[in-house]
Length: 396
Ligand code: GLA
Image 1: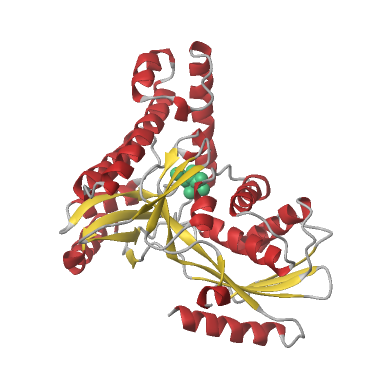
Image 2 (image 1 turned 135 degrees about the vertical axis):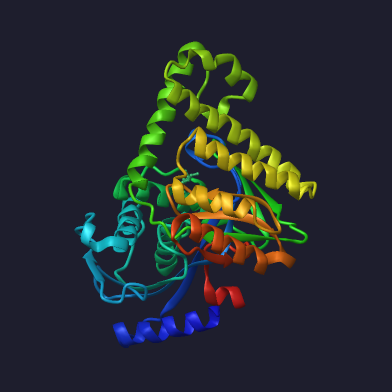
C-alpha cells in the first residue's frame, strides 16, 4: 500500500514538474488520534494521543529560483504558486495555505530556504479531527528544512507549526497535534504535559483489542470559530479563578479538589461547565495512562465514555452526528470504550473494540448510525506509527 503511494507520487511528480538535475526527496508525516484528553492542551493540561499510520506524503525538489510550486494528488485541478517575497493567506488556495504559512514561519526563523516544487498525497480524511493540518504542516516544515540541511529539533518544529496555525490560518490550536505528529512511535501513545512539555511514551499494549477510528462523515462546519470561542471561555474562567487563587497560571494547575473548593466563585454557569470539563478531563488522562500501564483496558474504556459525556454536556463540542455515532458504538458488540476525538463538531470517534468482533461491530454501527442520521460512517483500522520522517531513510 505505502510502496505504491510512494511510487505513484514519484511518477506524478515527474509528470507535473519534469526533469531536473536535483534529486526528488520523499517525506511523510502521520495524522494522530487522541485517545483521551480533549481541549486540555491549550489549558496547560495533559493529552494522550498517538501518531497513526495514515498521513501526508510529500515529494519535494529544489528549484533554481525563490518560487514554490505546490500541487496535491488529492486536489488535481489546483496548483498553488508563490514567491518567497510575498506570502499571504488566500482563501482560494485552500489546503495550499498550510505549506505557505510554514514557508513564512521558516523564513522568519532564518532558515536559508531554497525555492522548491512540492507534490502532496494525503490518505487522511481532511478536517475530520485526525490532524490533517498538523500533518501537512509538519511534513512541509521538516522536508523543506532537510532540503537545505538546516537542523531543527522536533520540539521546535512542533511549535513552529503551531505558530503557523495560530498566526497564518487563524485557529488558536494547542500543541497536541504537532507533538503527536512529530514524536509518534510505532505501537506507542504519548502522554504529554502541555504545560511543561514533558513527554512519556507508553506502549499501547491492547491485548485482544484494536483501536477503531470512525468518521461521522459530517464536515466540521464552524469548527474553527467555535474552537476559538471555547478557548476564550476557558480564559474567562481562569481569570475569575485567579482573582481568588494567587499563583494559578492555567486551568491545568487545578486539581479536582481545588476546583470543587473554588467553583462557586465562577459566576456564569456556562463558564463553570467549561472549566469543569477541563479539570475532570485532565484527571481522566492521568488515570487512563495508569490503567493502560496496568492492562486495565475496560477501566480505560470507561474513561473514554466519561470523556465523551463531558465533551457533550459540559464542553458542548460534540453535536448530533458525533453523539449518534457514540451511542451506536457504545451499544455495539465488542466495544469497551468510545469517544469523539479531536476538536469535535463533527469528525471522528475513537473506539476500543475486541479484535474478534470487528465485523459485527462495524455492521451494527453502520446500521444504527445510518438509522439515526441518514449518514454512512467510514471505518479506519490503523496502528500507532512513527512521527515525521524521510522515507528513504526509514528503509536504511
Ligand atoms: C484540535 C487542536 C488541538 C486540541 C484539540 C482538542 O485538534 O488542534 O490543539 O486542542 O483540537 O483537544
